[in-house]
Length: 475
Image (tube, rainbow, N blue to C red; front, side, top):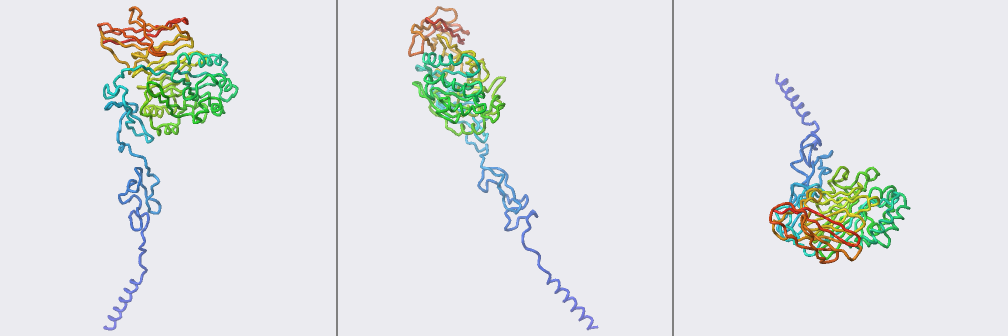
């Protein structure tokens, strides 16, 4: 019996010994089991609480790679809009704080923020959204704007355009002359470019006093190459867009040139194409802090039935970034003056057919514009502002009944016998005084009763008579 028990004990000991001799389990971590084990830094969805910001990025989604290491492919250095220092809500909105005006604009990351502060010319704010009117000191600043010459279309544009540059522009002596595209009817035909070349050479001022931008007809086929070769602006700056400044006795003019025919195919350019790369390049530039007048040149309008099809929001961001006050364009072969928010949009007609140009001016805080023929005399009231300009002028203001209203107008003629007169409603004509070349002034007394009055300025010379009338609101 004792021998049997001893044998059984020896068997158990032998069996237990075999169990202890089994190979040990693999101690290495298993990637994909959802548990983070050294040297793993993550496993599946377990990132140990880490995010993109913990590894040097500003945003995005941190992932776990196939080898259980952190994957930053979806991380980015895009600043979250919540981190914008001075955010705003509506693109194009304005504010006026401590005598300085700024605009709400989108940056390259589509975050809205208040842009650079531009001091009010008057030094004060009218309210939270705009500057108080400036007391004009001898302005205004004025510009000539033409578009859509269409050389090669079979019209008489060569003669009339040469006349505009050689005779009309010197008589009006603007700060600058701007041409907003479609110089040529078929940009791929160099002979048309040679005709345009001959019309301006020796007559147009050097850039930036004379500036062109490309239209959709200009860039057809090899048109861009010819544009660079046969336009003064192309030789001056081959980038087809950019920002430049002009000096005047009443302050600087900042001019933003854009190319809204930058698509790769003709149908894009016909409808308007303002590329993201171009917008970002312009948004990266710092606006001039001391400009008295800010103008943007484009070929396609931003409002209306046929507006800039691709990139309109980008264009509006550029307008807001630079605080553009006037947007000059063409393309639709008809003159139009309207507003895109607080920006005055001045659309020139087809010069090659209509033989008209746009006169644009800023007088203090007042903006004005008219379509004028190439025959004089020429006249335009620059102050006070026309409340009906563009339909409903957001810059117009009312005046106290019974007070003196200062009136200023531009008047030009090819003859030296030019006179300007002003009257209110059907009152007698009153002579205006020329205070500087092209600039005329007079004081008009408003009636004591509140009402809307008709202010009319008449230019007379041996060339003929021209008039410009606006409404004045007396309260």
